[in-house]
Image (tube, rainbow, N blue to C red):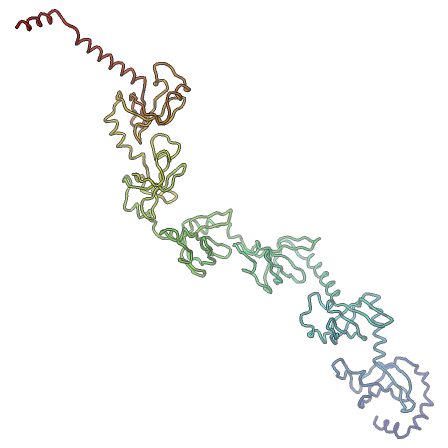
Length: 569
C-alpha cells in the first residue's frame, strides 16, 4: 500500500486519468459497502472496497469509548461511501455514519415493537443524573431507570453491556431515552408470578433476609418476598427480630399462608420444628433440677433459657430464703450457668417458673426439725385474710392458721378473734408444711384443756356470766370464754313466748348476761344455756329462803312453857 500511496503522491495526473474511468454513480453516494482494512497510516484507515481505488476512513471512527482500536488490518467492515477526493485520488467512506444510520433504524424498529436492544453504558452525563448508552447511536439513560434499587456507586456501571428498552424518541433531534428498570421490573414480576404459582402451603424453602422491622423480617425467596412475623421466629419470647436474625442471613422458612391475588406470603421459622411446649410437663416436671443459662436480667427477676424456644422466669422472690434481695444482680448475671428447680408450669400461657432457693432446705422445714406436732409456740399475727391468718414464728419462717382451726364454733372472719400485730399462742398441728410451704398451726386446739378445765368447774345447772355475740331467729349465740361458745335457744329465753323481733329489742351484741348451763356436749364442743331455767332456779331459791324463814318463826306451847321456866330461874 505504501507503493500505492507513493504513486498517488508522485503521479497525481495518473490518478486523475484513472478516476476519469471511475463512475461514482456505479457505487452510489451513501451506499453501504463491505470493505477490508488493508493498512492503517496515522489517522487514516485504508479500506479495500472492491473498486479501482481504495476508500479512506477516519481512524477515530474505529476507536472504542476508551480510545482503543476495535479493528486490525485484514478485518472486514461495513462502510458508507460519501464522495471522491479527486485531488488526492481516493474515495471517502464512513463507518460511523453507517453505524448511526443502522442504529437509528434499529432504534425506531425496537421502539415501534417495544422490544429491548443491547447497549453499553459508556459515560456519565456532566450533571451525573444519568448515563450515555451506545446502542449504535447515543441514548440517554436516567439514573432512576438504571436499576430497581438506587445505584449507590454510579461509576461501577460504566462499560457494562446490558439490555435496554427505548421509552422515548425525538426523530427531529435524533435523541432518545432508554430504561433498564422497566425490563427488570417486568422480569421480576414474571419471576414472582412463576414462583407464586409454584409455592404451596407447608413447603420449606430457602431465602435471604432483606430487611428487619419491629414486627418481623422480610425474606427474599428468589425474586419474591415473604414476611416472617415476630411471633413466628421462635417458640421462645423475643423482644425484637434482631435478637434472632440479621440482614443478609440465609435461612430456611416454611410457607404458612399464600394470598395469590395480593402476592402476599406469610412465612415461619419455628414451624419447621416441633413445638417444644407440647410435652413440656414430661420434659420439665415439677421439682426437676437442671443447669440452665441466664439470658436476661429484669428488675423483678431473671429469664433462664432451658433450651431453644423455652425460657423460664427466676423471680427475685425465689433467689434466696433470706428475705427479698434489693437487686437480682446480687445473685445472678447474664451468661451465668446455674442449677435451678422447676416450681410451676403454665402450659396454656407458655410460662415456667424456676427457683434457686428451692435447691436448699426451707427455713420452715428446718423449723419443723426442731419443733414437733402438738408443741405450743408463740406467734405474731402478720396478715389476716378472710379464710386464713399468716403468723410469724421466727425470722424467715411463717405459719398459717385456717379459719376452721381458730375456733370450734363458727366465726365469720378471723379478725373477730385476733388483730394484726398481736402475739398469741398457737399449736403446731402437722409435721408437714401445707401446699404453700407454711407451718400448719391451730388455735382452737389450745382450748381442749380450757374446755376440760372450765367444765370441771361448771356443770349443768351452774350459772355463768356470758357475753352476747350474735342474735338470730333461733336464739342467742354467747361467749363463755375466748375459746368456748354457747347457745341459748329462743324457747329458753323467757317463760312466755317471745318473737325474734322482741329478742333483738331485748338484747344487743356485747351485753353481759347470766345464764344457766342446761346441757354440755363435750365431744362436740357444744354448750346449751337457758335464761328461763335460771329464772326458775332463782325463784326456787327465793321460795326455799322464804320457807326457811317461815319455819324459824313458828312457836310451840312447849317452847312458851320452857321460856317461862327460864325466866323464873
